[in-house]
Image 1: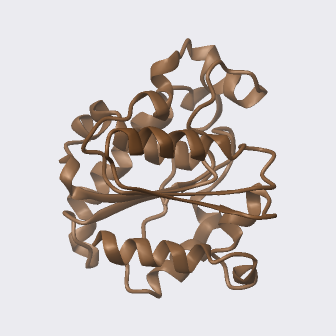
Image 2 (image 1 turned 135 degrees about the vertical axis):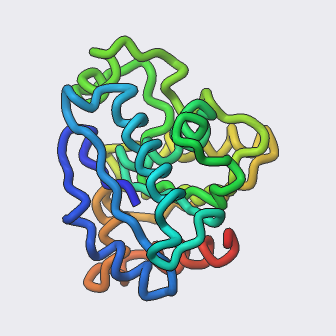
Length: 217
């Protein structure tokens, strides 16, 4: 699981609730980090995410996991990292991870279609590094992409639902398996917080994610 924070902030340690609640369903969970701010400008955040996936692939058996059955997940900026690191083949190749080891991707409130860069966070993380349209997940979709669960929310004013809708449409165009959910009334933060016990009643994000995991494995 890869945290969000506009590629400028966030700490994996703050997402223990994600690990606890997914692990309780029988899965081994890794909370991954990446360089932030100027140090992590594109493609730095993807280099780090690929390195995280590579570490998991080579080491997770020591913790009871199966390196050939991995699901990559993230929220917000972390969902971008997760999706793009899997869709653009250069990243898994650089990490030495075969694509068929990735059984699925779960993207929560992710930005997947935001070029040209028109916000402070995207200009800082992408525009300042000269990134172009090939930085966008909607432009790196190819046949053979692993199954994806993409969750958004109607009241998200930080990452608009069209990001999920556009990526899901592109995946369907090439015959890639994708499930998309748009939960009514949730804020950007509510989507990931619904994985915690206090906020679970806001939307069935945890149950939906676990059902996807069970099928993907």
